[in-house]
Image (cartoon, rainbow, N blue to C red; front, side, top):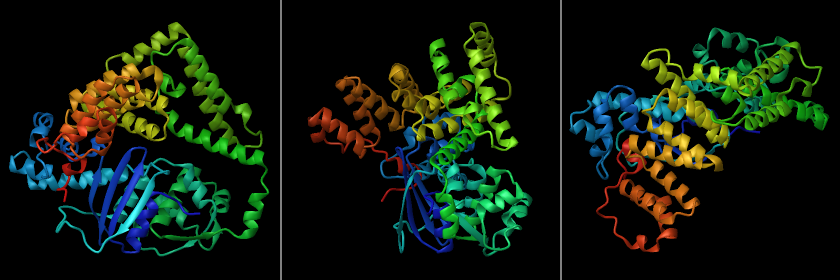
Length: 482
């Protein structure tokens, strides 16, 4: 069994010296990575927070005033970077720094996804004669794996393999802890046997092993038939237990960064009955009595600690007085510098984005509400919050409000107009929906989704000429479209 993950694709592209385009799709996210001679040379995205204008502002290369007026510098079929240079808003060096940071973020943000769709297309040459920036693939592999959280897919992939030493070309990139694990790989062994014999931290072990694999520091092969036969002898009950253990460990990775509302996966205005229902739902999954008594003491303690936090959250939010006191703490003047608050908000946003991509919309909403509370000037925060709420029937009215806030903050981003249009359509308001889809075309005249929706709502709109509409493709913000 192979693994559909960006790390594995980067490994193959680098070591097989491939040149071409890697496309990535996942729940509405679309990205395209272009490779040449072992380097990433260009990247495209439809994620608003990864667009060039946002990146330049985040890096301090573009002032807030110019960032707020960025739509004035977007010209049809002309890349944004060149337009900003021509208007003396940034230097060519600023643009190069922005492109490198943009390519890096576009790629590294894929590392958290293990159920995306990838497709690689080999190319002999690109239509672009030159590229303004490049990043080495090994650097992306190292940074991406170190930054991503442990995912049980890593264990599923490598746990079924025999591992043995490969080439030591990138040994120098390992930390001392990783070298300690690597030095124990002397001959062909089962990855799980290695873990059990030396009692490493499980999450660190599987991430380190995946890093070794992506660097070709180890080679892998399928386990022996004898080992597979033993695995097949496991009862369905054992398999289900392991699945639940993996799930509780995954929840445990997130819980320390969550507040009580986020732990119970309820909104801040949820009723007492909703809090109670959420608690019992979690209790049916994570109560310590549901797990085998044969677990190790360390594992039992982890499960106990996780459920203690769930129980404390419930007792606080189900008691009116305790809840009021807790809300005061949450709503008290935010401590820390503006930079610290923005950093905390960004963390909440990224956590919410991960949950949204996993279709866990209620959980995502809780984190994204915290993100907009900490930082109220980020249009992409309000956009993702609105997209989450639009998937939850009870919160669709709030979704409308947040789509409008996103539009006010980032009027050049078509996603908010389209999301609002789809919500209006869903609520049976075709005229309002049609108006939003037309606004999308005012920004991106080739937007197929908006064209399709207008065709369904207002057939005459297809006959209207779009020649005079200022067009802006998502990807033009980083490079000239040809």
